[in-house]
Image (cartoon, rainbow, N blue to C red; front, top):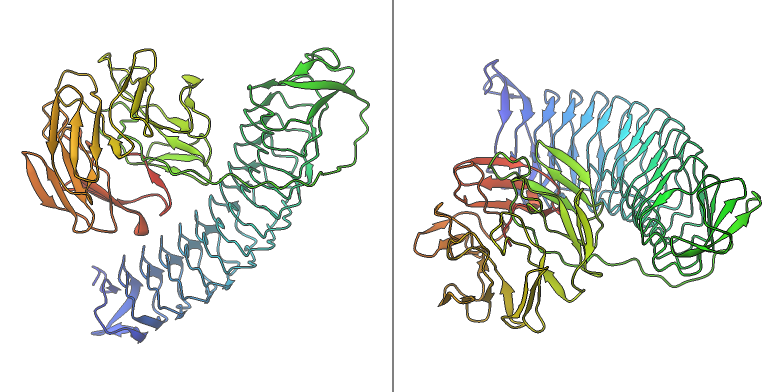
Length: 593
């Protein structure tokens, strides 16, 4: 009961089936469904809400897998975050007029949801609100919505068309990621922002025209759009970020407007049908690799433009030619191309992204390469094939965003460096191996136990059965080479320690759990949520649905027990905090291993 004499439903212990909530309980009006009130109620089939309900709290009906229908209150004004997350049997929803906001991930994972009615009273629909609604073939966006938020329709694999109303000014990152049947979309003239990966892997999309207000194409915007043949770019466009059209295997020509001054790395990589890129302006700056695996392309330029090499000479590793200004007709060459499958990535080490001595909760979102640090920043950096490896690479006590591209051995540290080191067979194991308080690039090659630290050392230590678990096990300020063998729970630190600790089902999570500057041997057992730190403690915290994310969450120089529950995006640090953050398919970047 609230202080104003109103009732909030905070839990349900009934037998499920068909449930009708009364309008009054003990004479007091029922006005809201609280956070997680019906969470994971697997027996709930249908529910009727009284007319007095005005709000649905976060995860109110999340994971009610048997729920097929719900009658919402006519007085409802808001639907909370993850309210119907993963209600996999829900086939339709009629949102009443009067609702103004639908929060982040409200209907995410409702895989049977085929019909949604959204009234014009709605002015905001949150990130991922209809993500992974794989049965949703069409939807009407209300006229008062001004932003298509990030990931809004990501994974809606049967969505064939959608009308974006005039007045929408932004299309968020990954908004239509993996909408593989989306054949056409018309962006209104009001749109001036299109986020990274907005149309990533829209393999049926054949044409796109960007409005005149769009001045930048962000990373991965059309990555893997294998059916795209017709692209119209606006005259005011100035910048194209990395991987903008990478993997557009049917694209044969594209006209680059005269105001473009910068073209990012691999913007036209893996475009095997691409024959001509026609530039109206002076030669833009570019990053090497612009045309990687697009072997037949020629860069055409107008005679009066500047900054180009001589006709026939190479620019961006491809030949150049003069262009008359007459727009050619696209002639795509059939090509069997498969969009790269994201490689498995190792969650990266914990990081202090602000330099305040406290670990920050952070995620890396594979489908649009979004890094998100809670309460601090959101940055698009990398691709779906990259492993996040943030660390302090410049010795300023603040962790830097970084990734390793497993297919090519490319390491990139945002704002600091870009280089090739290693191969597709290598696992990144960055660490401070020389004790200079700066992270070194390093890799472990599992097939022969080969370790290499850039500019420092190389050695053989371990086998293909071993997991690298480097850390400062002797407290000398330098990372030691170490591995854990699943088969018999053997830990081995080079030149230091050999011991058996744990079982084959345990996940190694070594860290400094007592604040003495030395890495402790530790593991987490998912089956029962048992954490064990050798010689220190054993506790039960979390369980089979959780991923361990130990880190120093309170800044006391001691690593704290923490876990992330992907299904409901819950993060919990023992005795410190509990928050909801991210998406269920994010990779956490606050985990030592």
